[in-house]
Image (cartoon, rainbow, N blue to C red; front, side):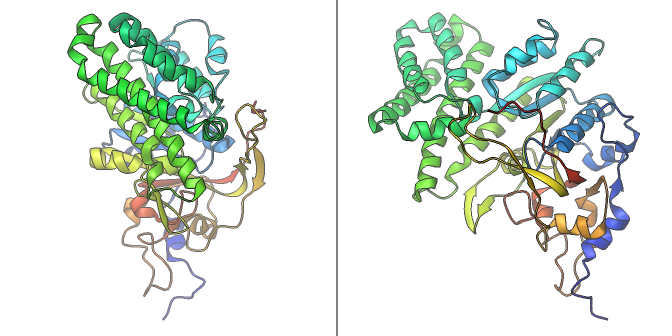
Length: 432
């Protein structure tokens, strides 16, 4: 008998195979998350996504999963979609440096993307834990808002190892300061308004500095140490990738962008994860928190055009099955729209916007059809049992995920999906 065009076999599979979860509160007992242990297997890096920043339920669930992976699975690092350079003082704070109140000062100038509560939990946990949990940033400086968080410590390093080159980095900082903002939404349009000569001078100076750093590694290390040199180079690379991103985004909005040219930020984030992995003890396991669009394992496309290669694709290529991508989605409630407004300190406002009905053929639609609550689905187990009959309805090998930019076959992009039935936008954000 032919399958009804209104029946979704994947939704049928979800009804019997998705694992219900009991709690959303981070402090709640963790027993309901035990199935996650088998789902992630021996993955060394477990990435936890979110279909939108600034959503309460995603932040709460991410904190619960962090607790579970640390307390029950031996994970000892939280890598976050946060500046590589800026991550070092946050790690020191999480290890017990300073006072509890100091975190607010550390985060005062940054977009509130939900890093504060995990850090507070880590600091409490580390007071008594035999193995402390480390924090690492992985992103370009200020998520593209300013080059200064990377260049200022590079200047400090050059004062020690190569004072002759200090003038060059100070010139780069002068130009960078002229368009710096709280986020890329402020800095990118300000960069576009720079004189072409200033844009080109910044790129040329950063490139020359990076080549000099690499060429003189033995000299620099002899005047400092290998670890300090490695951090300084990585910071300088972050400034270079951010500078490239300004150009790529300007070209994209002007209609002249090259194919997948917005990938510079994501390859830097992937490289930062691998950079940290190389320097931690063998066997270290990492929780990675970032947007679904960054953790997915397949390319990003808009309107049929290849736009970027995400961090997750690079990590999957480097780590294989040791990289695990868990996408977080919701089917009702609100999402956080971010209309641009250069008069605000981060260049945008946050509007709580009702979610549209799930797109037909998306995994969100399948969860909605299955009428599931808080639950997790291991997509590896879905193939091939839940395939559509004769192609009338897409199975999970062809089904799309609406919230992951965009229209990606979900079994290729993610290893598992965690569904929260509703989502609410955080109402205590200091954005304006």
